[in-house]
Length: 228
Length: 284
Image (cartoon, rainbow over all chains, first blue to last red; front, top):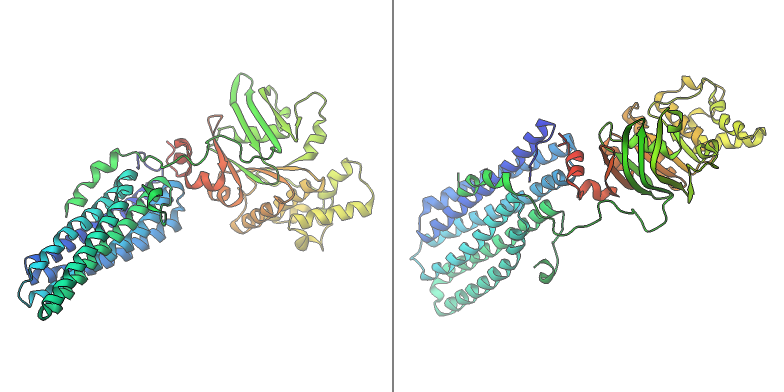
């Protein structure tokens, strides 16, 4: 972590601004997802609309992180841990933005579901959300703290999320067969479950970049046994 | 803002990352091949002031090794030890350890210093051509070595100037005074002068510090080409230059070698905290 400041104060300011914008993106994304899920579970269209509106701000922050990253590389030519932090920030931001996109998709599907009578199967989404969002938060936390063990621990949790999603998908497909009148609603829930599964994938990507930033280690595309 | 942001500051200040694995030894041989220059446990003193402490560094053959570190860390002193330039300074001497060039102790009593400096050429921070013609600058060392036959000298002058990427710019004015060349051309002339006597090693002490970016790029490109045939040691304060030009980098601090390893590793994931602090500009 940054234990000692750079001699060049403007370099510290630029690094700090970059990191803060990544964290701002993550914070907004967490809030957006929270609103989208509440919009779904509480059948609140206003929360869904807020979630959809928030996405624009996340998109703009992604562009800002890219711009600041390029400026940093250009002006300061960072090396070693500084370089890794900049590269990681620039790789993190598209993943956070994609999580924001998943929140928007959830909010849009929730609004469609809200036009029809409530489905009890909506409850199936909640544990998926809890696991996916906890992975996302931990991945961001691992990036901030440069906590390699925390980041590494996220990777096996993605397997768990994939299995949970597969189970939910099977249950919803069964319900579709049993109750074809609600086919549209179950289909929307299947897409929402799929969004949660994608959040886990993005959290894994963020965790991998966090490991790179902290330890200069590229753990992507390795068999599970090697990363655990 | 949400909890995630609020929790950030405390955690930021406290954490020290643990590397997943140690990738390389901090101070160790850069390759398995026998080094061209074997610096072993060298101590160096100016009078009673010790400026190098137990420096051990194997400089690989036909590669570029960069010495980096803050002013006064001893990197130039060590560089000048390699061709015994420090012999010219009163009270300055190696007080411990040894330096072997291709297996021969360069400080042994039977070593001819003139011959050593032919084998180990040097290029300085500021270009220092002789107040003579371009041709004479190159041929000077050859004549000192007893080579006087015109055809052979002509051949060596052209070969050296070509190797220093200067031939095309000066071939039509070899009799012109060297002081008429630009700064970058003068520096490449000095490199050509060093090459003329067919050295095995070229020492460069901040060779680009007085040059503009274009001249710097030309010298760096030249360094890249020369390493196929020569062992090059370069002292530089320019981190980017060390990153671009060198295969191995040695970081010195207060007269001690802190870390030595492949340049890519030193600039991406140095093992030593002091190295990291220096190359990232955190040095207090």
